[in-house]
Length: 147
Image (tube, rainbow, N blue to C red; front, side):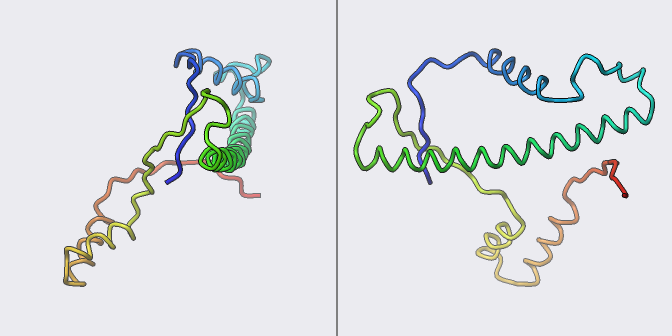
């Protein structure tokens, strides 16, 4: 469990952060420019083209987010190690704070935990099958490129 660094500075309001995020996303999104016609005025070809532009942009942003998260984690680990080894190297402007993070709840994890309380492998398999077959699902129609 890695401690997280928190700043002792005043945070902006949630509304200000949301406005800044919205501005940066819309300014970076090609489909959000004002030269695009309203959705009702678009032809099917334009809608499809816009859909795939947005799809590709979302994939690109997700990839960028993964890189940024990895860099942030590396920097956090470096700074945390520095503070733990040398004390407050940045004055009193930051402090270390522990935060509990939970891993994903996977079927393998559930099976491992249940195996500690259900001794019969057959009963365990029945419970696992019941969990898998009775979970809530939804079917979503999506658009995919074929060529």
